[in-house]
Length: 403
Figure: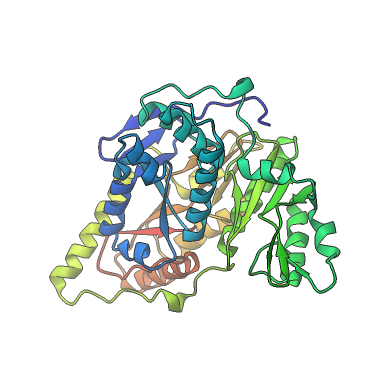
């Protein structure tokens, strides 16, 4: 159950071009806006590489059912298997809801139950033109995936279940994970989370048994809860996702496992070929500069070092999936040592007790040797996250994705 329902930050700015800014400084983009940004940055190939896909806040087929243009819907860029899992949970939630509900309310509640987005109240007002529907008994129920496990009479503690397999049966937390890899994962997880973990709703493939996911009973103490969500962000590169992705006050959260963990290799995403002509290189440089200047034009940006150092007592400010402020500051200092003229953290996700940015805009130096070091550094982050690295086309700014 949810403890003390919290309204998400209000929508404070709509630029009319598919970009929305909220009161806490975070942002959302429509599918069309996101596609344009990817094209301008020379990264549209990510959508055809089978490693990234758009996850719509409201799935396109449901948008069309109520006359919403899917291209205007908010999206995030994530792994295709997580998109499929979200769509699966939405479809199941839609089937379980009362068919006599108004269609708009039923669709909205199905997506809220699936737990993929934190600003569903704003979605109701902005896209459905209605007030957020009232949940039965006056509060939002737990995530549907959590309910499935909690209602399973055969549910067990995750470590106990993994340590006591049936004869001839291998138990693992995910279909493509071995029992040994599963044990190592649970051991690592307990360093950041030592509360109750439950598994249930079991599946079978050959001689391997695995659950639909792992339910975590979240602690009540705020700093302990914060540690769990910080840890979860570091696991995304291994194909592990915590739902919901941010602390929304639930008693429980749900760990979902990709069919195969690990981040894509650099060989799977070769760098794009350099444009053949000076005119094409100039066009690519202009597009990169245009994207950077658009990001810097919005209020959700800060000079990286001053922003990290200005954290209040008890507040955590981090970059990407780096779990500590010390690591984040070390990264910031590294960029400046490589020769960056100025570095901004953009699209900062601001919460009461933490702030995080996974995107940097770097103002590049003129010296070719320093530029070479900065592009090599940025390429390492791009390949780690599964993106194509930028080429040096003479641009003034460099956009870097850290997660």
